[in-house]
Length: 266
Image 1 (cartoon, rainbow, N blue to C red):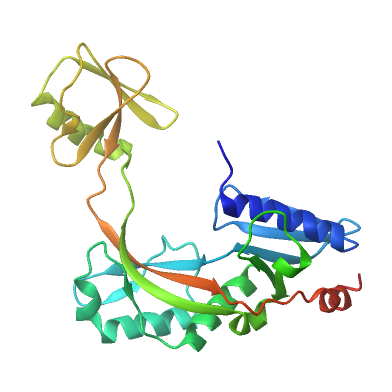
Image 2: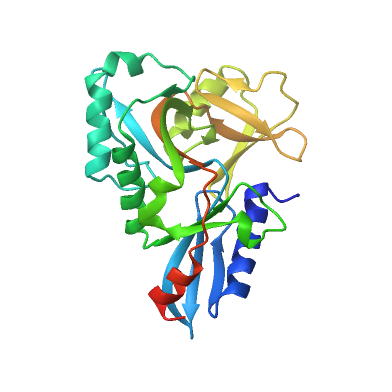
């Protein structure tokens, strides 16, 4: 599978830093665009962590719960709540009717950039990330292509925005607690079947192929590479509202390599 542009950027940025400084730079993660840390070691001791971000990029998101009258923080969020999270949720609740009706479309949240940048800085601080490297270019990187600055200076080099949207969580493999209910629905369609559990997934085997993969309103079958055998899935019937932080790199890039050397005695 071909690498995504952000993956190429992460690898190239790591190699560039590794060649530029007298320290060891290692890309951590890389399978997920939200896990993009470069760990810096000097004589096997971790000295700092760098966030690698290609071009216009997501800087984090908050998943919300809604009880019909207000939003609250949902623990499905990848980042913990902080005082800026609460400030943003308070703003959404003061304009609840504007956001509650949003379906899958995204709408801009008009809140101060200072609050948004402070949220991003707090999230990175929590992850011990002190620097960021970024570029609008993803390969054959040179010194002139790269922004390399301390995280606490990001507002000088990025524009930031916040978008509210509802995002489907996707169909998931059926949990064991729903199997009895699934069988009740399936019995209405056919009674000759076998269900077995393998690797925390449930497999359904039938004597003939199905023309309709929907089982009742809550369940869905997905094909395997074996004829008449299907994975049992639970449909995503809920859409979680969430807010997404977007960073857009400005043109005034700067590579603060000397500052980095001074900070860590390299």
